[in-house]
Image (cartoon, rainbow, N blue to C red):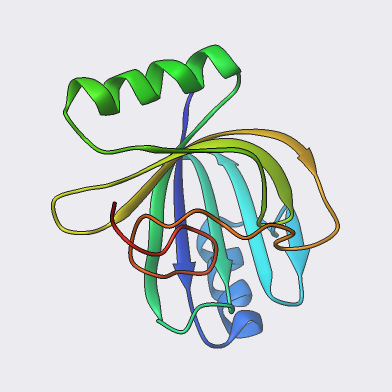
Length: 143
């Protein structure tokens, strides 16, 4: 099963946690001083916000999958659409360790396909690969 992922970069995390908690009628499932995430079932979305980017607004979009096989299938769809993709295995980002593939759409919006493997105590342990516009947790320049 796949879950749509949206990550917004913003300035005031607490103000936005209040807003999105009211909108979704739920508290975040993950909350840190610089990051919050709602794992919603209606709509089925992984909605994350962070106060880590230099740019405010849409940080990136993505598809979260539940297995390595689903992740490879999404990357195959990137290849079928002739989209560049870059692998990021065992990536430490957004308080999670994940296997990922990154691509960029024709508007320059970063997209990640990812399979979360475990939670971690820090936002980012790794130096991420370079692929798309700089953001809070995704790669930062096109191939």
